[in-house]
Amino acid sequence: MSSSSASSVAAKAVSTSGQYNSRYISKKMSSSPMMMEASAEEESHFALILGKPGGGKGTISGKILKDFPQFHHVSSGDLLRNHVRKETTLGIKAAQYMKEGKLVPDDLMVGLVMDESTQYLEKGESLLLDGFPRTVVQAKALSDSVHIDMVVNLDIPNETIVERLTDRWIHEPSGRIYSYAYKPPKVEGLDDETGEPLVQRHDDKPETVRARLEQYDESTSPLVQYYENNGVLKSFHGTQSDVIYPKVKSWLEKCFDHHQ
Ligand code: AP5
Ligand code: MG
Image 1 (tube, rainbow, N blue to C red):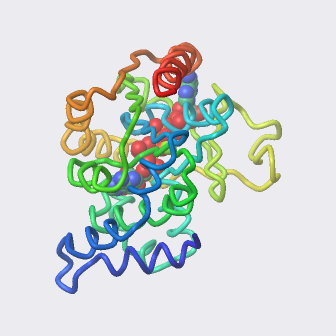
Image 2 (image 1 turned 90 degrees about the vertical axis):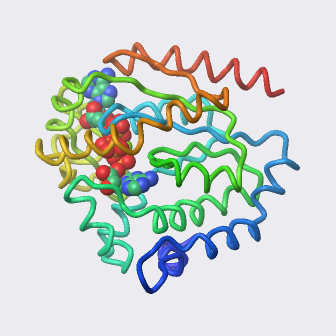
């Protein structure tokens, strides 16, 4: 699905008053084939990766995709940054929130992520969502359309996060993540695959990181309990992705065995 079509759907989800237009969203979702495909296609799995900003969601997602290539990765932050870069209507609106470390409104996010995900879900393919849902409203909207099988919750201390984010560099078009301390690029300042320049994220300034952490505590942390209550969440504690990841991998393998 093209970004412009995602943008138009997300734009349609905003009412003229700027209020959450649940009627449009639920109509769109109930008319989507996702629910049907999810139950008809036994091989497909829906996984989420939850965690604080800078907690390693993108890094761990990359490792999951190598070991479980059946997943398609949809990162809400990468989708937004592509809209911001292309200066779409949605991108211009979202940038205001992102640069202050605030959450982009639920109606825009639900339209954007569900629209991007449809292309995979229509084919009954498996999906790993990173950064979405981020509020209980988003989680409920998602549950109207798909059944979530597995939720990986990364529980990383705040001190580690602030340190890491000052050293993060990304290849913006692909979302590939580097850090000079942890995962340096082969050539300084350049993406390993395309040779294009790496950039730092505007929201990685210390004051914005603090705002993002507060937003996490306020709006996103309740999702841990929400998915725990649904019996699909597993938390992984620690500071090192290389130590955490083998545990994530073995838990996912067990989930796959259980679902077969
Ligand atoms: P988003 O892009 O999703 O950002 P985030 O959740 O704040 O998380 P990050 O991408 O910053 O961190 P990450 O957990 O992926 O960590 P990473 O692997 O990069 O969202 C950005 C903004 O978009 C939000 O603030 C909001 O405004 C908006 N938004 C997005 N989704 C939304 C939604 N659903 N609703 C509303 N608004 C939404 O790792 C971090 C660094 O650590 C990297 O440099 C990495 O190399 C390094 N690292 C990783 N592991 C290790 C290790 N073991 N040792 C050392 N360094 C490590
Ligand atoms: Mg990320």
